[in-house]
Amino acid sequence: MILPKRIYHQLRDECISEFERRTQVYEDYTVFEDERERIHELRECAIDFLDKYAKLSAGAMDEYEINEFYHRTVKMLERAIETKKEQYEVARDRLDEIEDMLKDKEAEVCDTSSELYDYHACEVVRERLYAVNSARRQLELAEKEDIPVMEARLKACQIAENRTQKVLCIDSVANMVHTRGSILPLMCGAPLSEFVDEAVFGEDVEPSEDRVSVVAVDMARDVMDALTCIRNFKPH
Image (cartoon, rainbow, N blue to C red; front, side, top):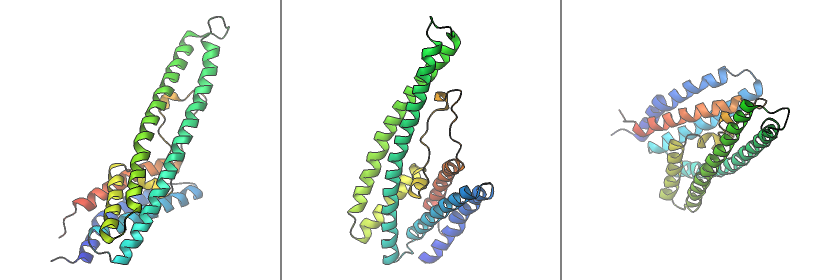
């Protein structure tokens, strides 16, 4: 019989160490100190969650550790929900700003009685306006899907009282992270910009290139790979 602690150390060697190695480059190739610090904090938070989940999966956690992990997971989920709501608000504001700019442009280049009338420019502006509306619809659908699911998961977690219920809570959150990788960076306090199709951006408006957001997207994929490794692991 393989002892739980040995299984945990095997999980660390095969799954967590690989995650640490792959994500170290995000810090190494970051130029600005403030961004490097934020990426370091994000990486450490992700490593801590994965490490604790590996230990739980191996059956190597005692009651105190499970309780601590449970409370931390609930707090992280609360933070993810609040951040997600803020993201949608920011994304809506960005779309509104772009739409206003495009409508002003439309009024200039689509008015056939105006000296600024330009058939091709008018077509481009109207295509972008269509893209804005499409992006807004996608955003609304995503919000209706995301927030209720996360809030339902939180509600179920908050009423956990015994060991079994707390483990189920942690596992359900890990399931959500596994299928929606971007959740963990949010749980770790790294806001990701909600997707807004580049087609909606006008000539003078550029999408955000915040390094932390870019890294968080890549790290989310690494988290999903690490969870797959943990769940498919066979003790040896």
